[in-house]
Each structure stands twice: as structure tokens, then as C-alpha cells.
View 1 (tube, rainbow, N blue to C red):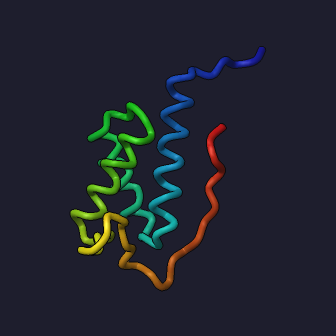
View 2: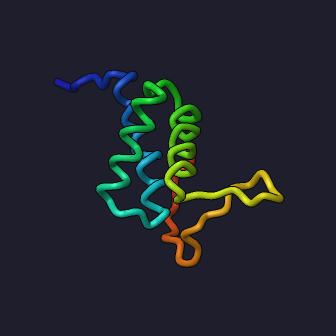
Length: 92
């Protein structure tokens, strides 16, 4: 008998996985990755990937992991170099 997967749980798991991959790619220690992602998931109430990522970026800026260049809207990573490059599979 094949188990049916709850679409809400599957979506939540996918959001969590993508947020973890994003933070992990910044060379942040694993325990801090989990803390940051958990807090961003709670703040966004796991509603959608863009909301979670917005909350995650706010946390990264607040903790000084990411900073914005004063002359640009683009975020600049303070961890470069080195940057732990990881590939992320795009959603279909």
C-alpha cells in the first residue's frame, strides 16, 4: 500500500530544505544554520518561499552576516572570500 504524501507538509519541507541550503552555502556553522532557518520559518509562518527568504535575509542583515553596499540595493556577502558554493535545483 502506497502512502500518500500531504501536499502541505511536502511544500513546507521543500521550503525548509531550500532555506537550509541557502544558509549552508554561506559557510555558517550548522547549528547556526538551523537556528536562523527555524526563526525565519516561524516569523513567516511557513507560508511561502519568498516570505521565508525575506525573513531569513532580514535575520542575516540584523546579525551582520550580510550587509548592503551604501551605493547599491544589492546585498554584499561579508563572507567572501571564501564562499562555500553549492548548487540549488530550481523549482519546476
